[in-house]
Length: 298
Image 1 (tube, rainbow, N blue to C red):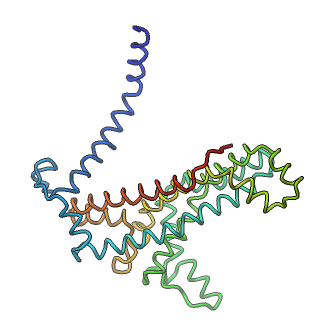
Image 2 (image 1 turned 60 degrees about the vertical axis):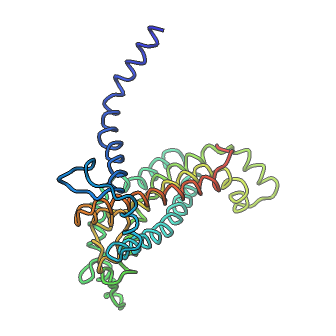
Image 3 (image 1 turned 135 degrees about the vertical axis):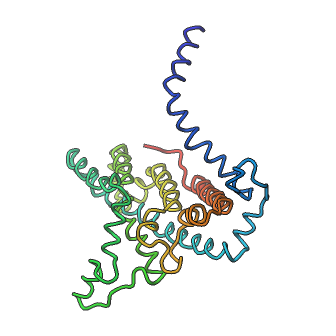
């Protein structure tokens, strides 16, 4: 018992730095945000002594035009971005992984590294490059369109095009991790299953539909959940490229939280938005786990 106790203390000792960082920069801020959602925050009085207002912040956010108009725009934009990005990211990752899978180990490693590389580059740098490409007057895309005889696109002057820039700039950044996970999952599928299906007369599409895709459901579930969370959290492209242009019509939920908290000092409203975002993400995660989970895994 004394030896076991000593081992536990040593384990806590080595885990202490990470635990302290977790408490200081994750748990305590989350608790503070939850409290702020139900208070009228006054900087001079702090979180604890600021007056309690109950659900007033949520009521203002949903019904007060001062806050609700921008909130609903941000919610709609975030939903559009998520609906567009998640299927594209999953489909691109699956198709590319299917192309890489038959190759040799060295070739696989080369392509996995090549597709994963954008994921380790700063998102700010990538957004700056895309901003230069989307610049309306002398950006690369519009210059190319003019050279081909087409009209330039008002990327940041119309809401639909501004939201499209966020989606387009995020597509190459996301599928890298999904490609690696799908290739690993494909490598674990027993070749005997595919050989049996081929002997029974199944063509390539039928083998994918009836054998491979069902066995990839656990990997797909993980990627769908993570992609959904990341899409709802999208911030950097909005902050760097559009800044809400035109007229705050291309904001996302996280960018709206940032604006309310740090531009308008409406910390209660921002925290209420964060709680709603958490509830939405949790709802979709539970829904996805319910309908995509599988007992089979390879």
